[in-house]
Image (cartoon, rainbow, N blue to C red; front, side):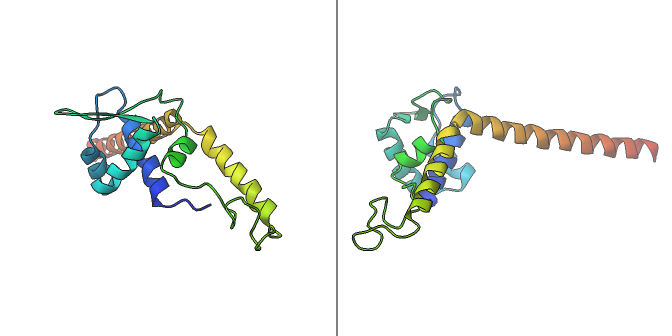
Length: 158
């Protein structure tokens, strides 16, 4: 699979946007600062995401981007495909002409891998990604609170 930074950054930016879903438009400058992705690169990606109906742009002061579809309806495959990222591990882009006019010996292997990868990416929604990030944050916060409590207990008994 040739997943480049284009697909990775698009997914990252969409998860960032989805985490702020319902709080008004999100600027690309804010996403850029939080995720360390070039603003001009985000502008290119969001142009493609908008054309594919995944985000809406809001112009003017207080503008930015919002999700155009329900957070549970957008999959990782939707995002990657929207930015023209091929999900293809074959050498021939699925045309079965790996060796000039015929397919290579391992064509079926790579085609099956493509189907599995695509199936997985299609099965993961933005809602799941957001919940996963929130669960991680709760876990980290819980460990921090536990560490503070231990420190307090050690200070009190010392």
